[in-house]
Image (cartoon, rainbow, N blue to C red; front, side, top):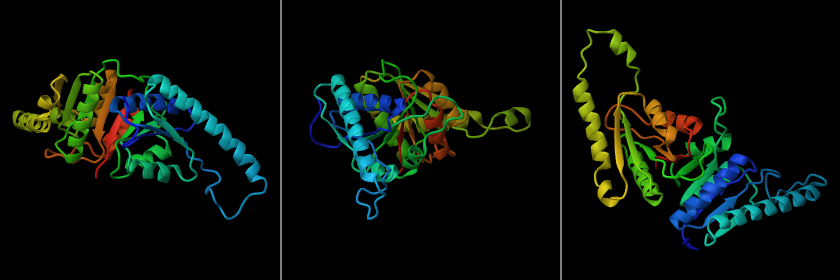
Length: 294
């Protein structure tokens, strides 16, 4: 049962079908967390609600538009309450810049949910999503990608690199996996360099066993204590010399959720920088949760 008070799960709605999927995903997540849901559509025209200069006839256009959008939001709210009749749902139709409005709401939210792009490789996240993901701090951001709206028992994949942001991602992943009865895949990719040159230069002798042991230590230390806190979550550990992006996207092929840190810097080499979270939200076949650096 959802609580009427407390932090809200905020979902941005832009009238697109991907955005509608995000609303439904957010409703299920809010219900699972016991949090209220806030539906937000930001009106970018006129640019300010109380602008000093009005375009002739502008009032005649904006009021019917607002009424139509309020009806749309009301219909969405009803759809969300069909998912969970006890879910408190409210909506807002503010004027302004979507990045500023949603970013401000995310500062005090439980979670910010956005619709993802289509799955074509050439289509990236929208400008609003990209700017919100680039911001530091605030609530985790989930970009709902792919066609999966419910976990359905598929595993949760989390990227691990030993950083503070990675620890936050692990906590998020375990909580989601436990509530949705999913297994967890914890992946640590310890190389961000291609291996082919090493194979071609036979005189290079690299201590691969020591490298792997160090990587396994990072993963073990990062996961320490979580199994005791979430004994219902089965964990599979993945340690690989691949690039982090390659490893995570491979593991995410059959996942219900991919969880990454936005700007982590681990103890062992470099991994999970902005390029990894950027690739995840643009290319993953499932929803992606991004835990942003403080």
